[in-house]
Image (cartoon, rainbow, N blue to C red; front, side):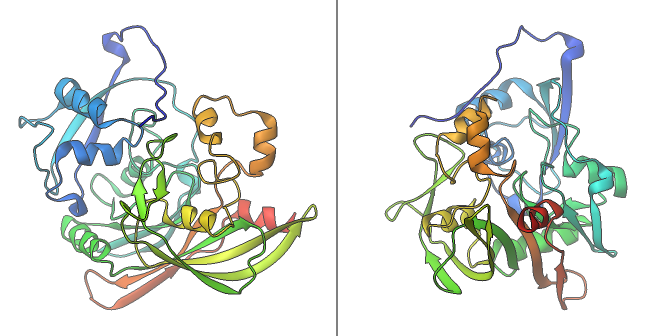
Length: 328
């Protein structure tokens, strides 16, 4: 299967071009193989590339192999070449929604990646949480794509993070998203039941609908508003994912005929992401996308509090850039 991988050709690094990127395994990854864990963190790296990184660039007190099972709290570092990082929203844009002895809930801005990668080693949500709450003071219990804005729940202790991780793993967390899509759905509510499998012919990190190899995935959509922009139809949808597959809302909206505004993987042209990865997306393509990021926002989350065991819910309003799109 062909995949999108774009590594810049660089001369061999010298000593002062190396940075050590720290990783601490979260509770929801307990028992995973190390190579599978790093594939989750380094989405654009192939399994073979991850194995090379483990063999040559992993620094840990214990000897770890690709097949080694990981456990919560396991810490190690990866040696990576220093590159100029893309600009990301600063810590002043990270809004605190709730904080107590067990939880931190933040509103992550679009464009901020969750975890350190080869491309982002300082400008991440994890590093900003460490700056604000101290080392290990707030660990994300789940993840959002870099371009997705909205609520992220973090545990303040290892016990809290483990309990939260079990809730997410067991499907006991209710999530609601807001999505700006192209078109006007005929019905005010509709469901998509379409199994999802990983990888496509063009993009290794994308997903596809596959009735034979896919895992079950269901999403319920409700229309919040229909509007027009320059004579073209758009809608604001509220999405309720009943399962938690990667890119589920984005691909389900697309297969229903209403792709997300700004979606370079599942939007107007499946080749957009390839050219975007090469920094070669032409102006007319950006015109078709209409936004520099996919228009998805994690708006509400509900779960049993890991300390009090009482059901709690948190909300955040639609991101400003998406409001501007609707109003303009």
